[in-house]
Image (cartoon, rainbow, N blue to C red; front, side, top):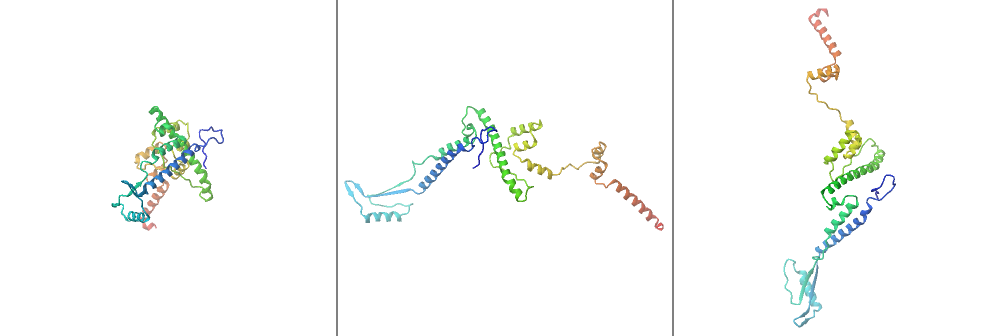
Length: 286
């Protein structure tokens, strides 16, 4: 059983369980679903009563066993889509769950609301109850922060579980990335703007910024190490010359970016070419 502390100060070692208030509502929800399945089966298998005999117009009809068998056989052979002509003393009635069904939809909705409220979400968000829209807006922001904290706690628990397993399997350098399929919180521009502003002012670290935005700092750091810095190489000779003049690039780096060979090697190649031309012009000197 996973125990999550809920509304507890840091110095408290245990505190109240976050999921304990929802246990009773969850069990009640299961009972409603079980009753709903039973009612569905009741609708699919209606109960039919056949009355044979009775008092009709002052005449009492007492059926014998042969009469009961005859009526039963006739009903069993009859197609349900067609009619059957029976004597006046035979009466058939079909009973289903119509009019006696438990309104499980409304009750299950109420129980689900109780479960969500017990897990810490604001009642104004879950049920729509509240004095005004401002209260609901503040509660929505609170719920978003709570969901982000729950996600980060889940990531910490998963890392605690899988890190040792990866190390035992010989994959200690690998990093797992977790994705949660629930309410998309990445589109909250206000929250992102606030986090970026806090990071620019130096109030939070880069690691905290990534965690609050739903990113894994370890995964992002590993990807940044694997990526190379790509710079636009469509420069003109004048741009590179200006960078060399500003001492941003060295002469050798400038020659490399222009696709030229090394300066010393180029001078050696030129001198060797001059010597070869001299010997070609004066073959007798060889």
